[in-house]
Structure formats: structure tokens, C-alpha cells
Amino acid sequence: MITKGNRSGGTPIIINGVNKPEELIRIPFTSQSFPEEWMQNLLYNHPTILPVQEIEPGFAPLISIGREISTAVGNMDNLFISPEGYLTIVEAKLWRNPEARREVVGQILDYAKDMAKWSYTDLDNRVKVFNQFWNNTSDGLVETGKKRFDRDEAEEDNFIDKGSRNLRRGRFLLLIVGDGIRESLEEMVDYLSQTPQLYFTLALIELQVFQLGNDTNTRLIIPQLVTRTKEITRAIIRLEGTQPDGINIRIEADLDSADSRRLSLTSRRMTITAEDFFEQLRKNTDQDTVVFAQRFIKDCEALGLETTWNSSSFGIKLPDPLGSGLRIGIFNVDRTGYIYPGYSQGQLEKLQIPVELSYEFAAQTAALIPGVGQNPKQKNTWNKYLTLHDFQKGYDQILKIVEDYVNQIKKHSQSNSE
Image (cartoon, rainbow, N blue to C red; front, side, top):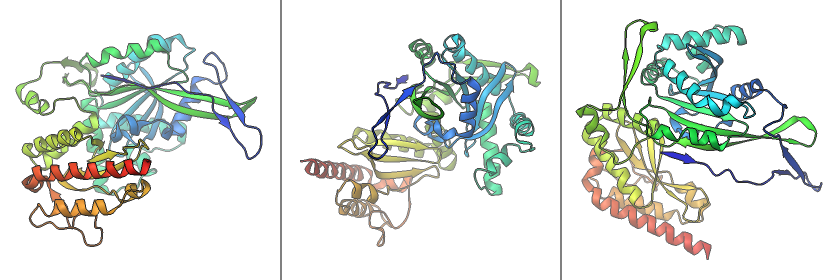
């Protein structure tokens, strides 16, 4: 399934005190104002400009680990990794370049296929080569990550394990980034929803580049998500061969019975982040807990709630009924199988909804579960985390309480708007 962004918009202006507002001028696609190398450097030095959290939460935040990284099929423009070991490949194109419209999708897919043959050592060595040439250091992946995030030894081992696993499975985020995305390129990615591929998500991101009058040194850049593959296509990826140069990738669309049973647990396809969460939850608990968690999500979404993901947990949240963009936390579930009420007080206060509603919600749900009580200090939560197994004991009644809680919030929101 492809999700396309809304690219309509007006002209940005700068208002400086009482001075006359000044319009920013968008640099035309056909302009020679900057080369592709400028865009690559921009992304390397400022990776937060890419809206990765919106696309696949587990891939954020981005850590730059190299530019012009060599593969058997060419050089990747930019390569990033997250603290959780997820890899993001970026191909930066200026859309005055005809290649951007004809070949870039196939190009970035070829990079992903080649990377799926790499070991962690292969990746680490490429990062070292980049750092030696550009940064005058011999830092590998772990050292590069350390300069961005503090880690202990256990976290480093986990980072290496996840990075290795994501390489084997081809769990990548592929980003095509340009100064203007043409409709023809958007149409080129449509086939990805129907074709078995690696476990990747692909997105097109437009960087709208503006300048103020004739000032070419000061630019405003507005990133915009144009198109993304919302669901991953599931297939079995088989790596055949023992020597690096002799490995072949074979993609099989037919799943064996075990995989079919596992993937049929949900009626819809999942993002990479969600799939990884359930894999970890299965390892930490059991298959019955995974089935219940998926049922819980489906039941909550039937009540108008949303599920937000990261690699270690998911949240059940209520979007502000008045459309402010705020989300009120209802429950959080972590990958070890524990559940606890969401931290909602701040959101309720901003929306001018009585926080006492969350106190009552915590008290009512706690009363249904033996051994659990309301936290006397933080009244909008429980006095301890609860396993999903124990949570099931009062599940039907809890769902009713959730529904009532949601309706009360909506009622107060409506009153505030009148």
C-alpha cells in the first residue's frame, strides 16, 4: 500500500519585527544553484532534517555513518544507522537530472539487495574506510555511535546483534530525497506494494529549498514526505552460497505453514518496527501473549484509538477530538510483556480537560486486577506494572472502562469548543 503526501502549500514569508514581510523564493528545479554533493553533505551533517520518525519510528534518530559507501552495484549517497541497529539508505537526486526520474528506484533497491549479503564486519569495515578518508579516524560502527549516544557494554552487544540481524533480513529504510519529486517517480513506486521484496520501507522525501532574495548563503529547507510504502511485503529471502562473491538472493512469495500461521495473526500488514516488536515480545513471553497483544490493538483501534510504535514498546493513544495533533496516552505495552497506563496528565492539562478523569480511569482499571492498586502519588497510573497475562483477567470490563473514558474526554472537548 502506498501513502501519498499532500504537497499543496503557499509561499513562506519572514516577518522581522515591524519590517515589511519578505517572501522567500523557492529555488527552481532547473537551477544550477547547488550540486547533488551539497544535498549529500546537508543530510550527512543534519540527518534530523529527514522525517524518519513519521515513516518508521525504529529507524530514528539517524546516526550518519558514511557518504559514497561502496557496494557491488555502485556507491550509496548516504548511509545511516539508528541506536537500535536499523539501517537507512539514502539516494539524493536533483530532479533536473533525468536519471532521477528513470533509474533511481531500481538503483536504491539494488543497493539494498547487495547490503543484504553483507556481514556486520563488512559494514563495519566500510564505515572505517569512510572515517579514515573523511574524518581522519579509524572509528568503526560502535565508536561512531558512541560519539552520539552513551552506551554500556551490554548495549553495544545488543547494537551489534541487531545490526547483524537487520543486514541478514534486509530490514532497511530506503529514502529517495530530492529538491522536487515528479509525479512520474511517485507512480514508479506503486508496484512495490504488489511485488515480494526485502523487509524494507521505501519513501520519497522532497526538500523544498528557498532563499531570501539574492542572499545565496542563507537558505530555508522544508522537508516533505511525498510517498511511502505503508506496509511491508512479506516473503522468504533465501541467501544461497557460502562465499561472499557467490551468494545469490532468492525471493519466495510462498510462506511455509509456520510463517503463515504467524503472519495470519493480524488482518493487516505491519511496519518493520511493529513486526520487530512482536518478534521480541514472542521471545520474551510466548505466542499466546503475542496473539492477545494483537487483539488488544485491534479492539482499541475499534474504539477510535491509535497505536504508536517504537522498537521497544507501543502506545495506545486517543487523538485530540478537536484535531490539535496532541495524543492522550491510554496504555503503554513494552516488549517484555508489561502494560501500564499512559502518561496523560500533561496532554489533558494542555487540552483543559480535568486530570481527575485519568485518576478515575487508573482507579477503576486497577480495581479489576488482583494485587494492583492506584499509585497514591501519581494517581493517573498503577502502583506496579502488570503483565499482559494478568491484564487479560479483567479484559472485557477494562475495555468498557476504556470506552467510557474516551467518551468522557470527547464530551469535555466538545464542551470546551462551545
